[in-house]
Structures are given as C-alpha cells and as structure tokens.
Amino acid sequence: MHPERRRLLHATPALVAGLVLMLPAALHGAEPSGDAPAAERGAIVPEEGGGDAREDARDAAVQPPARPTEVRVGVTVLAIGHVSAPNEPFQRFTATLALTTRWTDPRLAFEPSGAEGDRRVFVGAEARRRLAEIWSPDLVIENEEGERSIDARSLVIRSNGIVTYDETFDAQFQADFDLRAFPFDAQTLPIVIQSGAFNARSVVLLPIEARMRVEAERVGEDWRVGGLSYEIRDSTEARSSHPFSELRAGAEVRRIPGFYLGKVLLPLLVIVAFTWTTFWMTGEAAGTRMQRTFIALLSIVAFTQVIAGHLPRISYVTFLDAVMYAAFLSTGLTLIQIILTHRAAEAGDVARWRRIDGVARVAFPLGFTVAVLASYLALAR
Image (tube, rainbow, N blue to C red; front, side, top):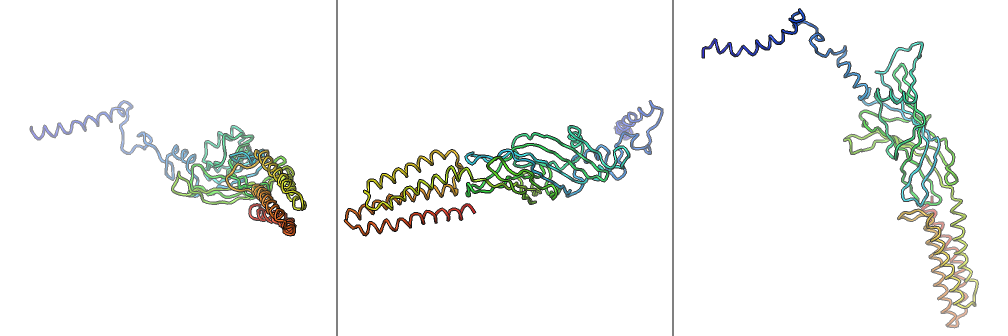
C-alpha cells in the first residue's frame, strides 16, 4: 500500500473523534477552547484549599476533625432498677443513665446571629437527624444488652464548633460479680464505653469529671449504692490492629446482708450449737447422744436444701459456703467424739470420758469460731 494512503487510514479515526467532539460546540454556536473554564468542560471544580464540595461534606460526616480527636464523656447513673439475684446463672443489672458526649469540630463553627445566638439546639427526633448528618465518635457501651429505651436526647452546636450530645435512657447491662464474700460482698456495676468505629489513633476518650457520679442511693432492700469509679485505658479489639480508647466506669454497690444473717447464718449457728450440748451430758448413754447429733446433722442437710435456691450457682467457695462446711465438719467431729467417749465408758475409764468431754466443751466452739473468722478474713475482706 502506498505510504500516503497508509498515513491517511491511520489519521481517519483521530479526525472522526475530533469531529464528534466539535459537534456540540458547533450546535451551540461556540467552539470548544482549551482555555475555557473547567466547569464549562464538565469537570469537578475543587474549592479553594482543595477537595470537592460534596467530598468535603461527606468527609465532615465520616472523618474526625482531627487525629486524634479528644472526646469527653460524662456518665451519670440516675437510678439502678434491678441487680441479679445471687442464684441467677448470669449477672445483669438495669439502670437509667444520662450520657454526655462532647467534642470540638471546627467544620461546624458559624457566625453567631441574633436569632439563635452562639448555639444551635436540637432535641428529640431533630437531634437524632442532625447527629446523623455530622461526624460523631460513634460511642457504644460494650456490655449493654438489647435495645435501650431513650427517654430524652439533645444536641447543642456552639458557634466555636463545640458539640455536646446528651442522652438519657434505660438499658440492661452485663456484669461479672465476684461472690466470694457473699453475703458480705461489694460489687462494681460496669459501664464500658468505647468508639465502635474509631480506634485510639482517631478518638481519645476523656472523662467529664463533673458528670461522673451516681445519684441513686439504694437498690430495693438488697443493695446500698456508693460512688462511681472510672478509668481510661486502651483496649485491644479484633476489629483493628490498633487499640481503642476505652472509658470503664463502675457504680459501686454493697449488699445488705440482713436477710442472710437472720434467715440463714443465725439458724445454722443455732443448729451447730445444739450438737455441742452433748459435751455437758457426761454419763448419758452413747445412743442418746448419737441420736441427738444425727438429728442436728439431718437438720443441717434439710436446711441447706431449703436455702439452696437462694444461694449463688458458682463453682468457687463463698463465705456462706465456708460456714456451712464448718457446720458439717463440726457435726461430723461431734459424732467421732461420741464414739471416743463411748469406748472410754465401755472400758470403765470414767476419768478419760470426763476429760474428752471437758476438752470438747472448749475445742469445738473455739475451733468453729476460728474457722468462721478465718473464712471471713480470707473471703469477705
């Protein structure tokens, strides 16, 4: 093929493309110019400072204003509704919380006006809608169960970009109680807060000291409420290679042991003391002594069966368990003491019989008391 013809064939596609591009300009009576503004050519015009307007709006909703952004959190426990009974297999509690979240977002700053002043206030559904339009730290309570019941919410945006979100709600929370000191135990009702979307490189939590408190005083007749403890720490999560900033708050509560003292411990001590009366019955037949002790032993067994439904279902030993074990041990040793005195009586050794009874009168009450005190020091303190 001739070289000129070959060059013409190669140039034909470019000529066709040029004509197609020139056709819209010709129809509108104008030629496209390389010097025309980018907007006229259908391109995205970056705003001054870089970035597209729509892209900036999207970033303002999903990207933190700074890295890291300090988010201050306040937790006020308004009321504690229910704390799991000791016989429940899983520990939970319900509470009414006032949760305050505060951060600064310069992108939301505005010029104060006479109508709204230096703040914009949103409440109820309007607060929820506006919160969804801006960036927020997406805080979650890690040990919260089920869906919370929101009583009130408000969002305040100040002219300097400070954002405050308040929410009052009722919710149920998981807990992990240490019942070794039961029924003299004190527990911490945990409230564990962290960002669900941003690790510590983007969001750092700090407490609002004035709003970290408990306003409830009692939980029914079972618990006395103390203060609120809290700490900030890093938490490692599977969803990120970097730790998350975590606020771990806890309402301190102490069990009121009156029910267990009057209905469990006192009757148990009376039954055990009943077995010790045999030590003052020197000369009494061994069969009668044995019968009395067996009655006490069966009473303890029946008693533990009755109160089992009110005791913790756990594998480790509690203080109340230790007292029951001491009661069983004391009763069992009483049976052995009766056998020893019976053998002394059969051998006609009255002096030995009296000596065994005399030692038992001191050793058994003292030993039981020491066992209970040692258990208290080891488990209940």
